[in-house]
Amino acid sequence: MTSTVFITGATSGFGEACARRFAAAGWSLVLTGRRQERLHSLADELSARVEVLPLVLDVRDRAAMQYAIEQLPPSFSTLRGLINNAGLALGTTPAPQCSLDDWETMVDTNIKGLLFSTRLLLARLIAYGAGAGIVNLGSIAGNWPYPGSHVYGASKAFVRQFSLNLRCDLQGTGVRVTNLEPGLCESEFSRVRFAGDQAKYDSVYAGAQAVQPADIAETIFWILNQPKHININSLELMPVSQSWSNFAIERG
Ligand code: NDP
Ligand code: 8X3
Image (cartoon, rainbow, N blue to C red; front, side):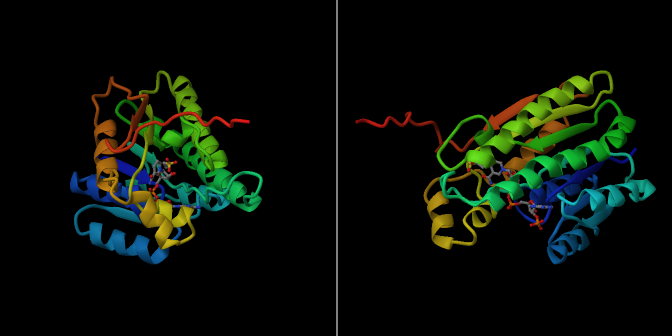
C-alpha cells in the first residue's frame, strides 16, 4: 500500500519542509493551507515525483474541512500519517493590553482546527492500522511559561494533553500519536507573530543558530517511520543556543 500523509499548513515553514521530506521518500501527499498560489506551486513541483492533492482550506472552517475530507479521492483515502501543523502565535503583548480577537484566532486555529482535522481523519488512520501515526505540533510554550505567551502557550498545552489522551482512546488500533514540542525555529512563524515587523523578526533569530524547518521535517519523518510497536509520546527539542532562565521576582 502506498503511504500517504496529510499535512495541514504546508505553504511554509515546517509543513512545506515535511512535504518535501516525505515526497523525497515517495509518500503521496495531501497538502493544505490558505494561500492558494503557494500551495499549488509546491504541489506542481512535487507532483513530478509523487501523487499530490492540494486542498486550499482554512482549518478553522469546520464545514469546508468536512466536505474536503469526505471528498478525498480513493487513492488518498487511507492515511498512514497526519501532521497537524497549521498554527500560529499572534503577538507577545501582555494579557491586559492584548487583542481578544488574536486570542480567539489562536484558539480557533491551534485548538479547534487541530480537533477538526484529527476527528475527521481518524477513521482513515485507523483503517491503515498498525504503523499509522499522528504528529501534533505542540511547542516548548506548552511546557514552560513566559511573558506574552498567554493563549499561544495555553493552546499548545491543550495540544499536549489532547495528544496524550488521544493515545488512550486509540489503544488497540495501532495508530500512534506524538506531541512534538520544538523551541526556537526559524520560519515565517515570527513574521506572523510580529505582524511583518522585520526588526522584531531579526531580533528573535539574531546569532542564535535556530532550528530550521528541514530539521523539524527530518524529526517528524523519523517519528512516523519508527517500528510499528514504538510510539514516541512527546519530544521536546531546542537549538543548543536556547535554554531556561531564572524566575522573575518583583522586589518592593
Ligand atoms: P509558519 O508560519 O512558517 O507556517 C504556518 C503554517 O500554518 C502555514 O502553512 C500557514 O498557511 C498555516 N496556517 C496558519 N493558519 C492557518 C489556517 N487558519 N488554516 C490553514 N492553515 C493555516 O510557521 P511554522 O512552520 O514555524 O509553524 C508550524 C507549527 O509549528 C505551528 O503550529 C507553530 O505553532 C508550531 N511551532 C513553531 C515553532 C517555531 O519557532 N517556528 C516552535 C514550536 C512550534 P496559510 O497561511 O497559507 O494558511
Ligand atoms: C514557538 C516557540 O518559544 O516562540 O512555539 O513560543 S516559542
